[in-house]
Length: 259
Image (cartoon, rainbow, N blue to C red):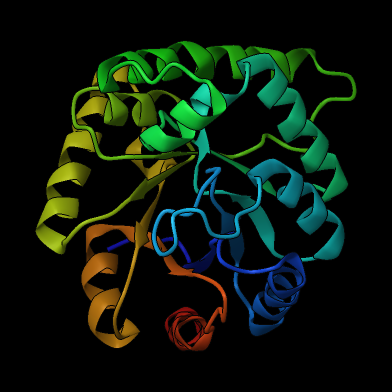
């Protein structure tokens, strides 16, 4: 079982809604008590009307940094392919300052081919994109150390994905948070593999917070995942209505567990 305090994240999907609705939902999520407010880094909706309303990730994060005051913010996750690593580090540092130290840098290798094709990025192969991510992470870390002013804190890096050979090794080497998804047996197996990667690179696995996407009743899903070591539970909501009833349920469960 994780010894960390339970946290609840909300992925507010920036699709099928106007921005005023997204702004109101972000404010409501902070008021309800979400610990982290995520968006995602895509250019088109992932489901529903494929040409429906959609907004860009990092511009929105800067707006959230000004709008909110307590909740941490970040992308779940930034696509490494879309921005030069040094530029991404500078963007993250800037949003870190705007938010007074509340940014989480979520990052992954990218997978949504339509984004790449429509915006002129080379899609390549999954292995190639993971290699690019492996090259980018040290460059981001190096740029953080050179920026003036420096970030307000050691910006937490969240890596999303479950690839057992490459992705989890990158988590072991670079991440403060690993975001996972899947059923309980799948997550349990991957946590075991992550621990082995940590041993191989000389990292204490307890340093890495484990996050999982969740659905269903907190009282049924939460304890099983918590027993595996998960401490960050993230739910997703989409437009146009952004029903936050599940967020309320998970926050209530979190408060009960942490009491």
